[in-house]
Image (cartoon, rainbow, N blue to C red; front, side, top):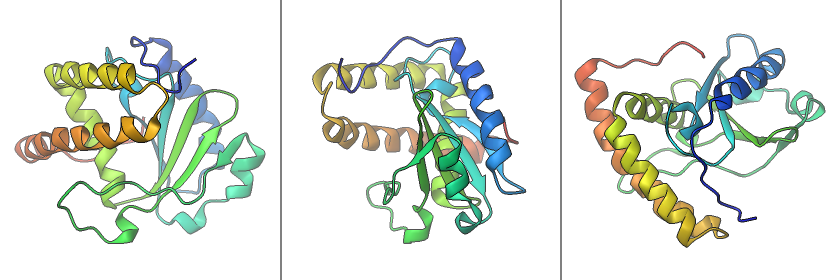
Length: 186
């Protein structure tokens, strides 16, 4: 089985997110917010069968990593989000905690409220939800990349990330036009 496999949208992804969110809420620091992010959060969009969850916290230092480990999450240390080409960002704008869930293919991204990397996936998700033509084009890119690089994560993301950044240019203009604000938790 290839490392990267894109599947048609599954109605169960929303239910899977909500079950996972219940578990995470019990572990999250007070005042945290949960969102279903990534392609599985966009109705109709094909994706890898991996649920991505963003836990927004006021301070990464308030996250009890041991409690998450005891509850089935494996930390992946040293990951940080990428900065779009040409954008100079301070390190703290890209820092996060990252966990893989052991009971279902899922990723937990823990990011600080108000940071660039915390806003980025929410805005892009909402943009794709409201622009089906952009979502369809993004799906074509992902499917093509997966067919060309099924076992090469580095190659897949080396192309996918800048494509996503192109989407974000449109998403930022759209956000300004519609006065987009961060939605409440899912």
